[in-house]
Image 1 (cartoon, rainbow, N blue to C red):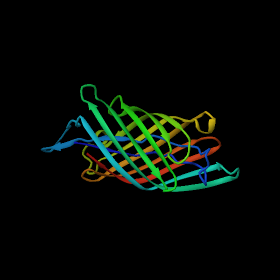
Image 2: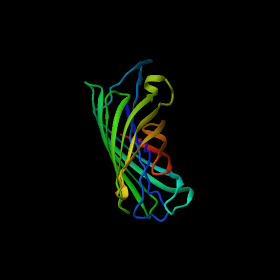
Image 3: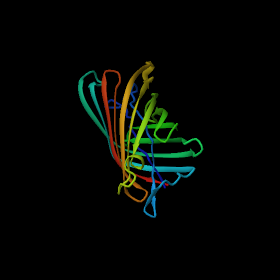
Image 4: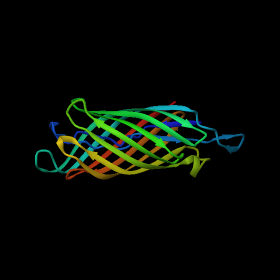
Amino acid sequence: MRFAVILPSIAVLLASGLPASAQFGGGPAQLSVGLNKTVQGTNQKVLDPIHYGAVSAYPFAPFVTGGRLGDGTAGTTTENGVLFAGTFGIRDHKRSSAFEVGGWYWTKFQSDVYQIHARELFTPRFGFQAAYLGSTAVPGTAYSTFLFYELRSRDQAPNSRRQWNLETGLGVFYDVSNGRNTSTASVYVDAAVEIAPRITLNGTFWYVRDRSQDLNRFALGAGYHF
């Protein structure tokens, strides 16, 4: 049995009024979970399918910015929006690896941010992601790269009633907006728990300090895997 859930660590335009020199924040956007299946009272591993995918929606997706704001003042602002995401993956059983492509779209209706990403899982637990971030509302470009590691119920507690997984990542965020090139370390934590067949409850937290600002990203939502 197989399910995949999208857990975006989100990006947003980081100034009120959405000036042309808006900054971006962003992080990983895909989390894969493979499960074991109990057959006749034994914990028998069932191979994941070669092709898999998922879609998800996050009605609660606030972006909190603290520090020096776009108008020259200091303080904290919160941008509330919604986010939609999707992914598609191909697994190689011979090498225990997988390749995934996907993306997400965040909007608060008068502004938006999107991400396109690719992920390579070298092992069922460890992988690398590279992503491109942009907007249809204002000019700006950003990139991110992450190494990530997964803890999964199929490995830690294969007989648990509700399947779950936890993913953490450490990487670098590259902000090339407004004619400036800056880079900084970034970290995230993603979590998911299965609440019904093919349905998961998803949550994510992501942090980076970019250009004198502390950027925290939160999201809660649900995913459907196929």
